[in-house]
Structure formats: C-alpha cells, structure tokens
Image (cartoon, rainbow, N blue to C red; front, side, top):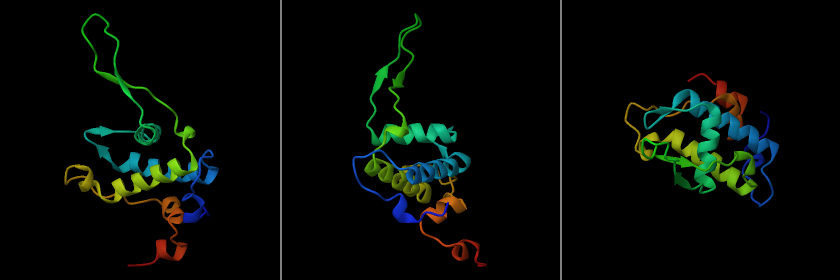
Length: 135
C-alpha cells in the first residue's frame, strides 16, 4: 500500500474510496489475526461487519421464536461498503484505537496490543525505513 494517511482520512458524504477500503481491509485483517473480542475470534469479514454496525448504528432485533423460545438477538446487517468517506475514516480510526489500546475497551490484560502489518503502517504514514529500522 503506497498511500499515506491522507488517502484514508477523508471527509465527505460520498462513498468510501478504494484507498479507504484497502486500509479498512488491512486493519480488519490485523484485528482478525490478533484480537479476541470478549471471547470471540472474528475473521476479517466479521470485523468489517462489526465496525459497520458500530458506525452505522445498526439495530438489534429479537430473533424468531422457533418453538423453543426466543433465540436471542440478531443485528440487522449492512455492508461496510455503505460507509461514506467520513464514516470509513471514523471506522478505521476506531479500530486502530481499539487495537492500540485494548485495555480501554475492557478486554482482559492478556489481550496484547495489535502489531500492525506493513500495509497498515504505510497507511498511517510510516516509511519503509521507519518500519524496518533496527531497534
């Protein structure tokens, strides 16, 4: 990913850009590989649906009673592709903050902070030299 921070930190009601979609996918991939969210390990697609639900304020409704009583709640799902430029930037920022500070989300102390991939780090504005510099 050669785009820098400006490529995903866009504002506007227009649909999210390809650069934002790529950054969102890269962030969700890192979260999927490294974060257990309150006992649930989600794949990349689930993280995208999850953050879309957060940003788009998707409602939860009671599940259909199949004769054994209600089966809990179901989130009325929408696609992350529906995010505007502003919403995509908000979603990416929220995921990065959650990955950087899992303790602030109420996750157990065993949940380590996310080690972001090169794609995400490039998107955050780090250079190849910054990323691959010896400690």
